Image (cartoon, rainbow, N blue to C red; front, top):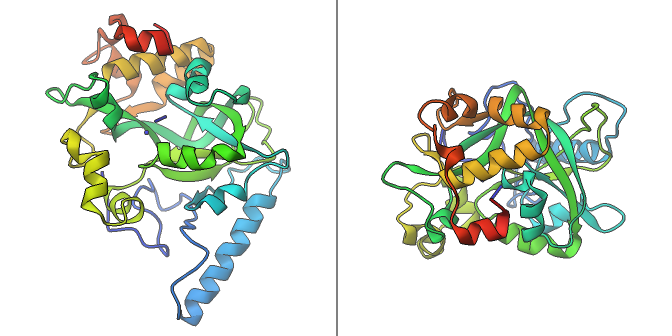
Length: 302
C-alpha cells in the first residue's frame, strides 16, 4: 500500500482514464501479445510499442527529460527491468517513505535512499481493506483512504527508492493487487537519472481492476474487498485514514525538511484541489496529535 473511475473502460490502444491531461506521455503496454488474428494497423501499433519499450529500457542519464512510464502487467514484464545483480528497484511514496515500514515488508531490502519523481502527484483516493482489517478505518466519516500516485504535468515528488530480490516479485505483485504497476525513472535530488527503472504503484480504475486482476470474478472481488463492504475502490469522495496519514507525514518529516514540505504541498485529497497541508490545518486538524493503536506503534513506530 504505498495505494474512481473517470472514463470509459480501458483498452490497450488508448490513453488510460487516469491521465490528467492529453499531454501526459503515458504509454500503455498491458501485453506484448494481442489476440489473433489482428489487423495490419494493430500490428504496426504493436511494433511501435515494442520500439518504445526498447527505448525506455535503453535510455540512460544523458537527458534530463521525463521518460515515459511503462506499464507492467505480467511477471515477465517485471523481469525485464531487473538489474544485472538480480534486484528490482521499488519506488516508495507513502508509508514506504519510512525505512522501518519498508523493512517490515521487505526485510532484505538494500540501498534505501531518497529520490525525486517528476510528472506525478500523490492522491488520497484509494480505499484500503487493510485499514478495515486493523480497525483504523472510519467509514462513518469516510476517513478510509490510502495513497496512490497518478501522472500530473508539472508536479514533482520526493520519494524513496530501494532494491529487493528478484525472487520477491510474485509476492510484491500479490500484495499490491489493486494497483497499476508502472516502471518509472526517478532521479537523484540533484537531477541525475538512475540507470535502471523503479516500480511504482499507481492509480488503477475499478473497471480495469475487476476485469484484469479479478478476471471478472465476483468471488475474487468479494474476498479482497466486498467482505469489508467496499463496493468501489477508487473514489473522489473519501478522506485520508487518520492513522495512516499521520504515519506518512512523520515518515516524510524524518527524511528532512525538503521531503516534508513536498509531502504537504504535493499530496492531494481525492478532490485533486485540497493539498494535505491545507487539510491538516482545517478539517484534518488534530490528526498529528492522535496516537496510533499500540499494535501499529510497535510495528511502525509512534
